[in-house]
Image 1 (cartoon, rainbow, N blue to C red):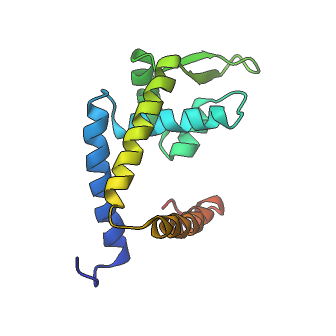
Image 2: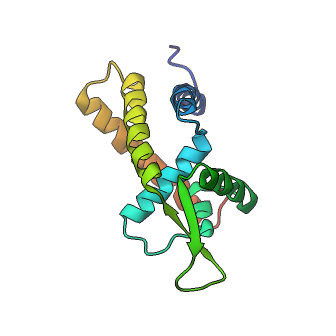
Image 3: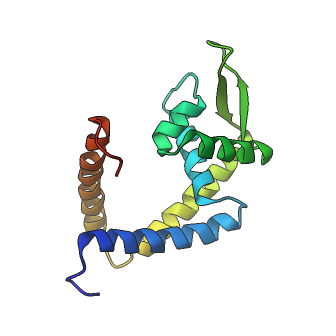
Length: 154
């Protein structure tokens, strides 16, 4: 690979390769990448102790618009991967919860995601992989710090 490729193009190419591999794996489970992202975020929030999770929480975390999230939630509800119930705190809102089917599928897809990551990182030793994660953690913090300060979305 050409060492002169700009960093942005490198990230774009990596993203496309990872996404292509994950999309193929997710198609086998009748899911899109966006749907999986929402399910993964939901389970992560639940596991983190969130008492109630609303659509707005998922929109913020996934960085998608209200209409987009509404459609994703409708499709996931039809697939019985999540359920919407009246909020216990405010009846105007619905809380969103994962189902057992979602939890089971989530474990399978996480394993596929780990396989895709291993595929992408083949040739790197364990220490290099740890360094890559540490470096990209810093880059992500930098990117999203601007968003929290009212800057443009990355």
